[in-house]
Length: 252
Image (tube, rainbow, N blue to C red):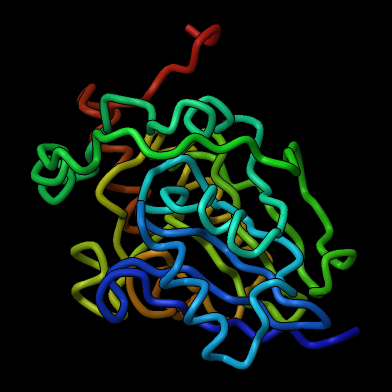
């Protein structure tokens, strides 16, 4: 079994928005950043000594435009197929995130006013539709796609055989990555309780590090302590009727 190395690919700032390059027998890219980031990601992959046309797969963790905004462009540049979960197929095909955004706190309420979050990006038709846990050995890395719904209905993470969890927006660094190493919610969650359940499920697998879309890698022990506090906070908000949750069509 080949070892899979996780390499961050900064899309905005040093750690503000991240994509990732997974190196094994063949390279895999996780996430595609904001619109217009495809060429930057392509060049950073090449700077790590990897021929971008050797990329075997582009995995998109969820249907927000800071993660799939350049997926179609990156697909054209590399020729690699794109994988995304079927539950986020609507946003991918529309080129828009589901709205309204449901803020997790003050940062989300402020960011929801940003017109860039409401723009339409180039639509995407995933070549590989994820419906459940998916082995990536055939794509050249010792890793699995793990469904982690909650941030969006179709959120996924990638867990390597060595225990690195590339977690998308399952968890973030505080203030959208500005406070490094401190676990926090990202600005938005469609279903905070379901997201926390997904996070705890991943923590039960004893990951060695959580590589996130916003910020530096997080230590599992710090994330576990944060998750315990978050469970209490969500319980209080739920009891007070102040916990917004997106209802998917057909579930009301």
